[in-house]
Length: 202
Image 1 (tube, rainbow, N blue to C red):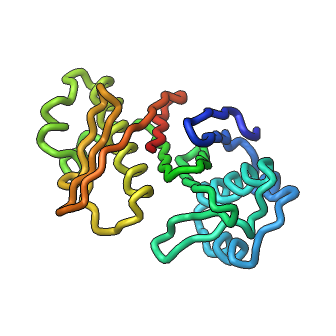
Image 2: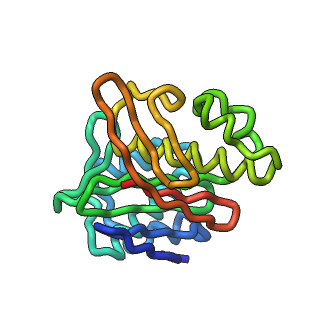
């Protein structure tokens, strides 16, 4: 289907691709690097293959070559232009954020299992503020999870604890990371896309 939505950010843009194509259609006109060809060949999930290719199609439409995209040892992507990039996908959607400043993006399908898992990524304050009504609770918890995923990508640190080191205020659309002497406050935007929550932090 192609890029279905572009959201302008303070220092960049967020691009959303609705994945409706076959793998063969998504491969059309792509020139994958040797590294990307190897990664794609190792993917056993068709959904992951489609998301991988959809991201490259987004970059192609932005005139960014696949060889311009690289990853560090933690898996954080970067562009040869020096611009910051963040990538996420969930089932039928792939999203790419490109910004002059550090940015994190995440998209999540809203599912009831988030309630069962909430104790693993929410702190006591976040849990105590959760709505009682199930639908609202699912939205609330999915937003918190998505924000923390986006923050995790921004910080590029494998030692961060979602429950202990991050706090999200969904009313103010603010988040805080606190780990030892490292403390930072960030803002984020959240969007509802069908049954998905889309978050970009900056």
